Length: 117
Length: 109
Image (cartoon, rainbow over all chains, first blue to last red; front, side, top):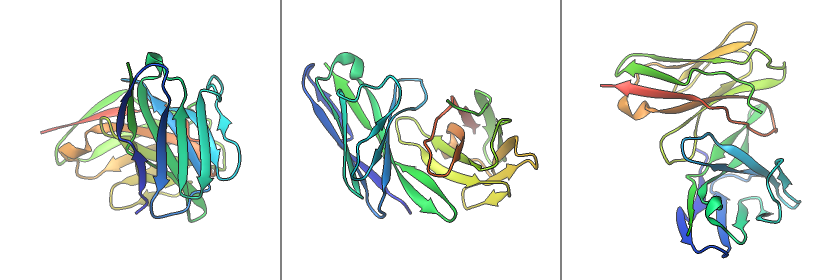
């Protein structure tokens, strides 16, 4: 199967600090990874598209200077929430794109629960 | 923006088939239909996808109407562990996924 991991699975931090979340594709190479966030009782919201070796593309309304994305290799993308505030508390989920025949599909990580105090 | 419409919730008796509908009336010719599910506090799990032919795998079957404006995900023998939110998504290969609100399926003992 296609396995995507995230680390950490949960994190609690103080307001004003930065938090880094790692997303790894364990058994396949992913040229494209995606970052989502999900608030309670809501659907997933796409934040940004991360391509290996290039700058991430952010969705409208997502602050690129606050949510720093680095895709340094074909198996690793990181999301850094800078100067986190309580309103950044959310469930952050990454996915990695894997070719599948004539199409491709995304495999999702287990998510990271961020709580900012 | 999500281009699909799904009922907000459905119930299904354990052991029976669960049929989850999805409307995607504005689908383009090169857009695939994908189904994922999300169990509480976990990342979405891939179920199945297709372009125009019906598809089946070990988890489910996907039935796409001939005009491709709607589809149905079938879980042949629902179990309690199939209780989850099911998302139907249409997208062109390589493009982003935009999630709608999905269908909350509850399997009842």
